[in-house]
View (cartoon, helix red, strand yellow):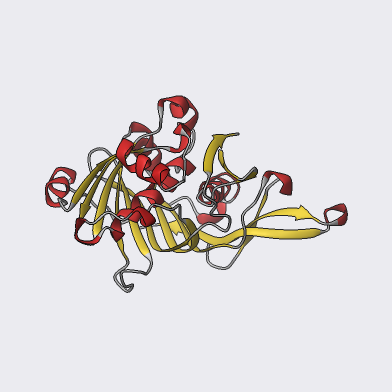
Length: 274
């Protein structure tokens, strides 16, 4: 896992909690979800507060609910003798029994999304010009294609962590880079404003669907992510994201993702591996 370091305060990126919850449910709660599942769905995810290294060890607890559903909490213990529990993220998990298969013609989308195009180097340089510096370990964006209300981004793990990222299905660098790319939705009319290049953090998520073959699709790389506003949301509302294999098969979907500026959105932002 990786951590964000902001003004000397090292915190776990919010997207890392999704992989923690998925792994915990697969390992400890798989039997509760049933053997006939075709994937896992996380629902009603809420990020309550960031967890820093000084907060101590992270714990995740699973609570069986009715109808093959599991709720979870990710927390640390603080206060005197660890008596105080601080919840950082919570949600629920259930089985996907009829995962909807979908295919995206990536070549066609690239040819359609012509409002603007960015290389990864140009994208991160724009952040740096605005005072936000990402260390190489968290720079997964190779290319961004901007269409009308839609963004397509090509994501690959940097060489420095390629071997370390293979054991994670939804690596925090992958999902965090998808959030970085979502900023391109605000480039209306192809206009590039320096003020837009600020980090975003997850606040809540309606649903995350992860198909059974996601591990193979994610590890084969590169991963393509398609980002657009939710149908029920306006241009300043929630986001939907689709993660696709290099062939265009959708292996994970985020629906209804609300974001915000990080609590500590200082002008110097770096990323380092633990």
